[in-house]
Length: 303
Image (cartoon, rainbow, N blue to C red; front, side):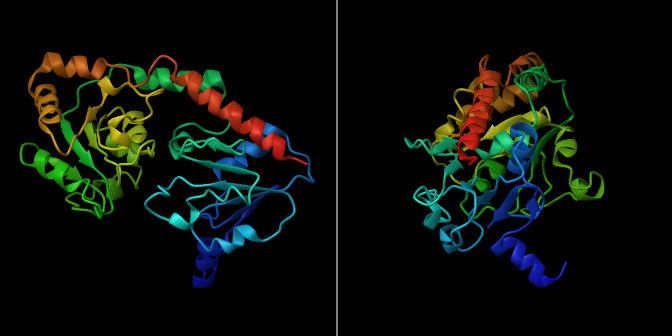
C-alpha cells in the first residue's frame, strides 16, 4: 500500500463493505458495525450507512451524504479528540460511545463489546461465552503480564514498579519491553500469550467515569485476573464482579498488594480468587439488550 493510501485510509476514510462506508475510521477492514448491519438487519440494496470516527478532520462529518450517518468512538473524548466531545449529535442520525447521554439518538455502546462478542452473537451465544469466562481458572506458573505501548499519563508506572519490586513482570509491548515472546512465539496474538499468566496488569490510560475499554475484558477472556485501574474503579457495574478483579488504588495501594500477595503465597486463597466469576448474573442479558437496542436504532435509520 502506498503512503498516500495509508494516509487516505487513516484520515479520509476508508473502505466500503456492502451498504456501509467508513470515514475517519482506524483501518480499512470491514468493521464490526458493517458486519452487524449486513448480517443482522437484512438491509435492502438501496440502504446506505456512513460510519464516522475521530481519526481525521471533523468537517467531513458535516458533508451531506446519501443515507444515514452514524458516529462511533471508543476513545475518551473528555481527554482526547475533544472536538468530537459532542458525539456529532447535531449532524448524525445515531451516535455511539462510552458516555451515558440523555439523547434519543445516542446509545451507550462501549468499545469492549465489539472486541469480546462477534456481531452475529445471539443472546444464547453471549451467555455461553460468559459462562466459559466465568469458569474457575487453573493455577498458572507465570504470574504477571503487561502489554502496553506507552505510559504517557503515568497510570502504569506506579503499578508496574510496585509489583516488579516483588515479583517478575513480563512486559511484552513497546513500553518497558523485557520479552519478545508475544511477537516471536505467538505472532502478536495477545490472548494466547496471556493464557500463560495468572494476572494481567491492565489499567486504563486515564481514569474517567464510565470509560472502560477492552483491557480488563481481554484479560478475562484469557483467564487472567485483571489488575485494573480506571472508571473510578467501578468498571461496568452491571456486568463485572468487582470481587473477581484486583482494583488498584494509586493513592492507597495496600489492599491490592495484599490481595495479590495472598493469591500468590496462599494456595487456598489463590484457588478461591480464581473461582470467583468475572461476570454478574445479569451480564449476558445486559449485553444482549445492547445488541437489541443497537439493532432497533439502526433499523430506524433505514429509509
